[in-house]
Image 1 (tube, rainbow, N blue to C red):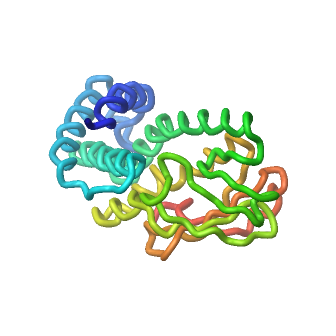
Image 2: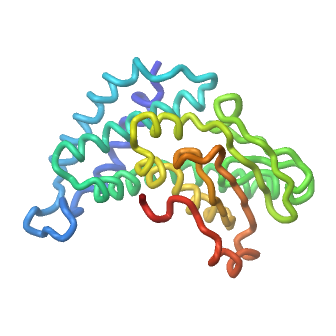
Length: 241
């Protein structure tokens, strides 16, 4: 059973229509017009056909969550390629895909926000849970769909907030293998920032696996405590490379 096809196909269709219809086909070229509903339907048709061709060759994953995420990454790339094939410039296509991806990803944030309200201090919009005061001495465990062993993390001692390093991410591996690190940063990695904001958290991250580092460093703080300290902190991926 392919959960991405069953669950996400109708969902992604609604989001793609909402996000793309009416957007410019090309930046700075108004004569090229704007995307119509028919354009979006054509992109989706091509993307799902490409997904169906690629899915059987996807690397096997050890968990349901990592399997689902790699399949979603495959569809992300397939939709992106459909845009490129119709002449959409790469940077513009990345922006469009990232905006559509947020329409899907933010739903996870609403679930996490509810969990955080029900269990303050234990659950996070970024998908992890901590034990121990403030997360300083407790273990960090990623929740579905980012749970081990599909994803591997190392807890880091921190004076404030919660700190951990992700040392294995199947999504990063997939996009790097397909030469699409820039797409991964924009349409996956960078969505963690607004996701954290949904429960009043601030994410600081300076390293990412997809951009060639040996881990992703997650440092998460209550937003109110970090409003003035982040301006000098470099964040990987905020500028597309």
